[in-house]
Image (cartoon, rainbow, N blue to C red; front, top):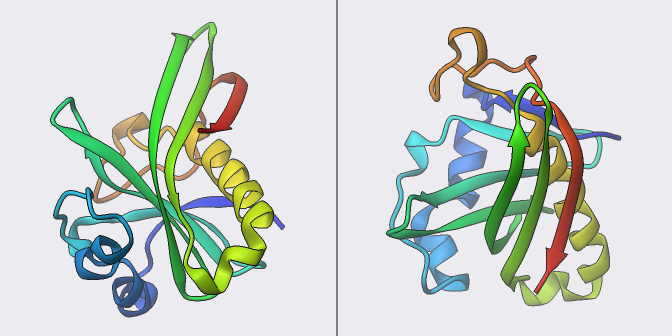
Length: 156
């Protein structure tokens, strides 16, 4: 049971877009910025456990960065603030603060499991060097890895 970075396969696109779309996520996270599901091309997935995690929107100073973890066909939405120290050659120290964790009521009893899945998924996502060797957002490199020497997630 492990997360793996992938380009979202076309055969999973309809299922993905039925859960990950602006209308669904706006109900849970009122501050989320509008986004287009069709433009999201990659996820970090654990197929054995049937869960995946991805960045939904954000970046830059004008938008808060949001991620979603999908478990049992339901989206858990959260705001993250990633802090990185170091260099690619020497190694990176990653610290992710998680804010505004929005767990659907029917999954609330699984809060600790969900937090652990978020930790595991974000760690694998942090290792993803999707632009290495000519990778792009639309056609990411799924094998290159960032040199992460430490990784922490803190729920605020």
